[in-house]
Image (tube, rainbow, N blue to C red):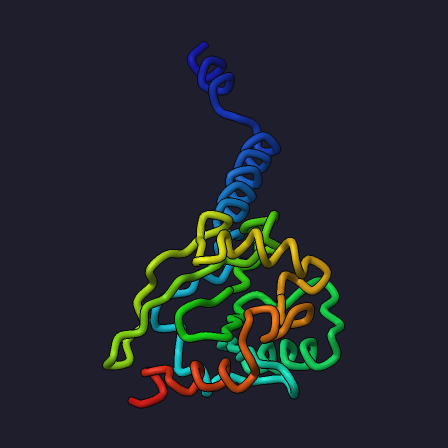
Amino acid sequence: MRPLLLAATVPSAPTLRHLITVLLLLALATSAPAKREFVAQAKDFKCLTDGAQAPGKLFYIFNKHRRLRAKAVRMTETGNLGKGYPRGTILQVFPFEAMVKRGGKYNPGGDGWEFFRLNVTPDGQTEIVSRGEADVANVVGSCQGCHMKLASKYDGVCEFVIGAAGLHLTDAQVRARQAADPRCQH
């Protein structure tokens, strides 16, 4: 009689395989989103002029992956942004702010962008002052609010719509602020 009791408590081979499959799928599903996002750190923000630029544009383009940086530059040159900039792309006009394409399911209301306010110390170190979605703001207001309102057709990149004049600056004034980036002096 004992063998019958034991047989009743041991799962059958198909049930055990099903359980193992479900557990493996759950493990993969919970770890996968992190791989599809890029989470920027202070060290990812470098001297502006080390970034790539598309002809006629004021913003600098960064991406750790050369192929993705080249793709972002081509997209900027043509204005054909398709589904948007590649994951890991950092766009900066000024040393003190940036937008970073995180990708994955991050910030669907902001097309996957994370907005940053930065401080660059006189010795060229970058400090993240604030980061996030609609809550990150400058003197004009919410970064995301402005970018999505003005340039939603251009993946939130305002230069396609307003340029330097929209900032009440000339191209020369923007370039002067870029040249003053302390990270470029070290």
